[in-house]
Image (cartoon, rainbow, N blue to C red; front, top):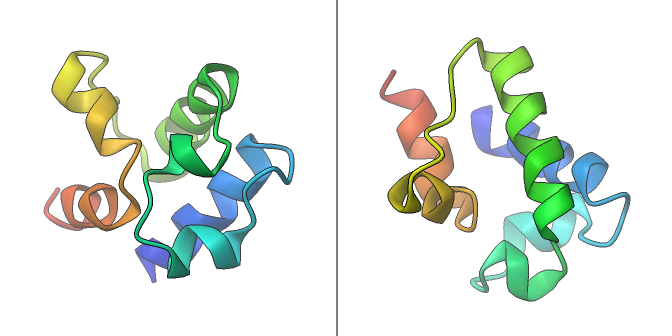
Length: 78
């Protein structure tokens, strides 16, 4: 499942600051949970490697990185 894998990638990218469980169960933005800008860059690299897509670095693209549901839906639609 894409959402589960993304949650695992968030946990890895944040070096544990955001657990996969937190990413899956909270309604808060990932940055509010502790995903830093460095963590976002790690997450972008992981998504690009894992899913073979290029992450849009515009404002709308970066907003996707803050919402696991939106990000999973975006990747599923590709």
